[in-house]
Length: 483
Ligand SMILES: [Zn+2]
Image (cartoon, rainbow, N blue to C red; front, top):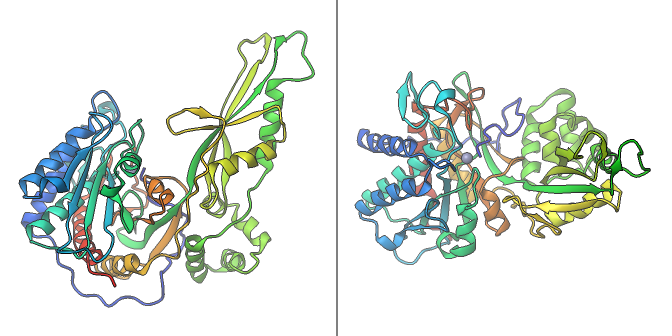
């Protein structure tokens, strides 16, 4: 996933009033940049799609070789996974002596979405530099961050830098799709390799540019849980010349209309509260008044309803469930024996898929319908998972202080705000395991140039250099000792 601009942000918002004092950041040397570019090129030109031509292991193994050649110990560079083509790489930059805190994990997916040569102006699996941009599949999502972090870890190691706690880099398979999600597999099978105080996931968040001017830096601090449900109505059917009183299609559509009319309850958590508080400080007029009114105790319901007319606000306020697919009947002249719909829910942190399944049964209001859970792999089950994402507490200072300071040293005056992502990334597996995740790419993109998953995906060369500088300083900051 890369959902860059997650929310409607008409006005820039700030995390806290004070701008941090700025000191010049160390910048990558010409040699550092050359190596980082070479790694980026190598990764773009290795096809890691979930297709017969793609192979994540080839990319992971190429990075493994770089770390081993640079002198990393082999036990700190692990290549592992449940499938020969879907291996993950976990690299550990060890603390000097006894670590002073739990590790920090940088989580990056290595797979990319399929791209066809016929759709593109250039070969999507060739790294092309043109007019100040790098072109290729994965230049925005997210081989630029894979490469920047590989280059950063190599540079830190080469300089002899020793953090006070372990820094881990995981390059994983099947975030975009496929059966072997590496983030989940590592957590379930080798938690000791990826266990961390918190996760930095560059698959979301970043700096929004408006005609070259940095407007705001978004940090994903929590995300909703993705969940599909299969709703089924069945009927004995029969000849359509003799309609019966009961009918699978009508029963299903009647129930779906009840869902369409239903609104899940309004909710705020620490992340969205901070976000809307920041927004309230900037917005004027009715939107400003309404934003302040929803922050009151109790929240103003009329204000929440007015703001909910904007879909991105609505999604940030509550669980949403919407019918996304429909299938029924087997012949034009027969009564349908089965009518089925897929309902896709994005669950507000704090609720489980099973809790929402029960709520759907109640909303649909017809005990003849079955409501089943559909897993990411497409398996249908009577019961949904009970696990729930826990919204993290207000954004932690240990992450946000250096993140804000370094961001503002690179993009002066740019406010930083935490957001709740309405979509989903690999962060969710770590959030479900109780490990806070922060999504930040340090990539600056024009608001209208989001090409992730699209054709002619590209990244400004300048953005790549800036992300290198960000991660180098940021890794050193989070690697410092903690009391
Ligand atoms: Zn992604």
